[in-house]
Image 1 (tube, protein in one colour):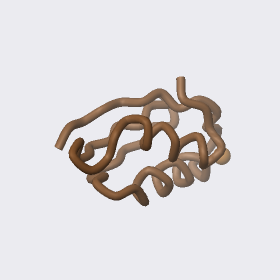
Image 2 (cartoon, protein in one colour):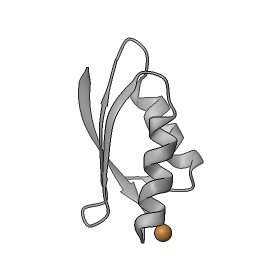
Image 3 (tube, protein in one colour):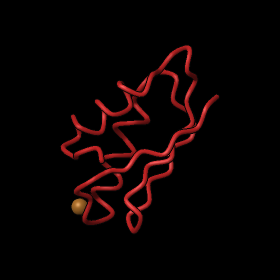
Image 4 (cartoon, helix red, strand yellow):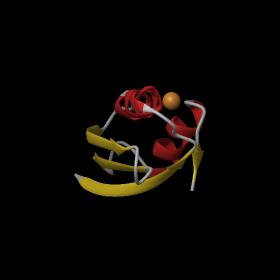
Length: 68
Ligand SMILES: [Cu+2]
């Protein structure tokens, strides 16, 4: 597993945090996901042989947020 921190732009409350977490978690190859509202960071551990950064970013954008 590898870990990456992605800046998520546009989260305002815990419902946003949950949307982002759920969207990332739904991707195959994703393990632990932590999304912090105050820092706007999503820390994701993923299997790089299954998931890639473009997919992680795409899931965040599909959930309605921008990636910084
Ligand atoms: Cu919100």
